[in-house]
Image (cartoon, rainbow, N blue to C red):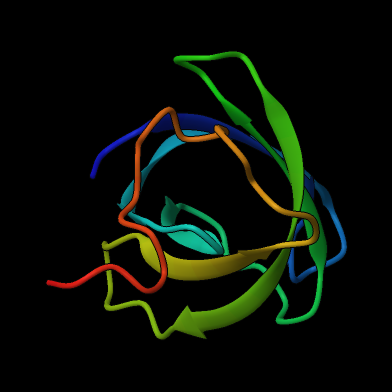
Length: 97
């Protein structure tokens, strides 16, 4: 699901990062975010959902290698329960398919 977000933190090269971008996938525990700059695994970032204006802290869990001219696929995991951060109702953990 594509959700517009603002990401703030530190890029892999140590420079400050503030980027308006969007998610490719969202979930109860985190998201995949498209980034123009590479983030270091383990780095904490602040993500603002631009629909709801809610902000939450995440940790970079994985980064997929970028092909030339493409964005970085960046997996982030929430540091706290997200509650209604994405404004999406996910199925209950033990609900039948």
